[in-house]
Image (tube, rainbow, N blue to C red; front, side, top):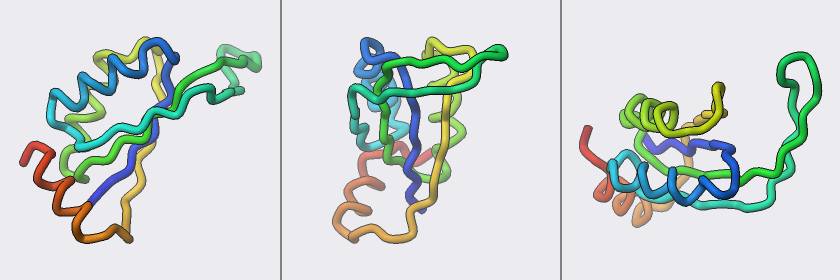
Length: 104
């Protein structure tokens, strides 16, 4: 099963984390969407931050390893790590993704 994981991160740290995840073979691809304007509650007040959004493609069984690496290298105390199972994916992409990810 393929999983899409969303992570927000400061723009200047997005490529660093993406390369750590790819080098660790916990994902096959990371898309970086820059200039995401995030508004959120933090310590009792509304904060606003310019961030990058990482769209990470991985295998469901690798999510725990992926989550561990994100928590280890992410600069936030509480990083956003949200995963969705993908139920529709073309066969060629799925085969490539499974080949590129660690077999766990």
